[in-house]
Image 1: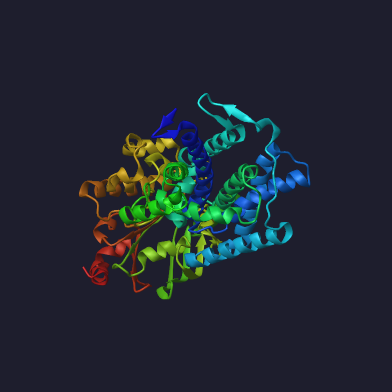
Image 2 (image 1 turned 90 degrees about the horizontal axis):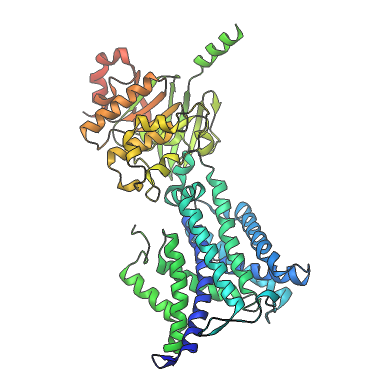
Length: 294
Length: 244
């Protein structure tokens, strides 16, 4: 069977890979957007936290014998706690200064984290086995897919939409939305905004950590795994625009799929298509597809 | 006997005591040593021209300015080093000049945003009885509300917390006369209910029948302080300061 002259397996194969990449984009850009919304911090360390999540899972398994399922819960928690410590001790001191300071700080932090990991574990990459229960293919009828990849997409979607519901439908979410608009006023209305800031940063970082655990069995765990992802994540946030949680999630997924399709139809463009879209969106709609015009 | 002494003491402690308050935005020095008291249950109007420092005084009380110096006692407690959310929890409700209704929150989410600080606060049904419009519009996004509805929401939101001292910044500004009348009646009612109110206004006409005392701010200083009973004799002086 062929579609547009291509074997359906090839097309769907790339679509699925695109969807998996899109899941990582969505998880990572969601955290990045939440953090920027409330803290006004362009979190350049986000890729490093992604890598730390993967490394935490690898260490837990190799050193502590902690299996994948526990790591799926514990690694994001540990990464998130690390983020909380970073916010309380360091990032907080830059509050009220120009964006540039926190940007440079998180950029430096990312370099320091990646450098430390490279020093200890090298750059060759640490293999993380696919958990036994998710090994082997699943037959979808028209094609066979590795079970682990389906799992990644499902977990990412559940977590993304759970986060959407948390932000849009709950009281604590209303604090975050209001704080994103005017944090000082929210604080004057009696809400402990410094605590909200800390928790939000921790949560965004934990999402990156979770993405890292999910990525560990697919990519090798290595110090640069996050920084190559980070540039695309920034493009996703720019394309999606700030101010819409659902917009960020959908943009992340869609760009992964578009990248996958580009690999089928015009492979030369697959690594640049996201940035071409970014340029077009910036020209036509500077606030992003789902963003609110300032 | 002891209870009586204590309540007398409580009555003698002003709801708000501001002493030598200075405030800065960046390098601009806006307030130059403002001092005044607001007694519990009193309604005080802060008058002045645009840029005289009235709104900054309210913002400084909430610690929302870049830098502030001086002393601000809330019910006898020094707040100079407190963060805004701690100041608010001492029982102060702040309604900013731009109303501060959050666009990404529904009308009801805006109303429920500030946490309750006292058990005796108005219940939600009492709030909705006082502001029936807000019940009708509860699911509307904050920015789809009319100016009058937004103003009512901004006041309802702080009443619901149980705050007993209200800082209201230019609530009548830019609204239709029928809404201004409704706000006037509302302040009158709150005054009867014993709220302490510090009302920033440009309009002496709006505040004259409401306030117990009038403080005119000029270039970041208190230029004139007039009791309600002396208002008639001082109206000319006040209007001169307001540039009317």
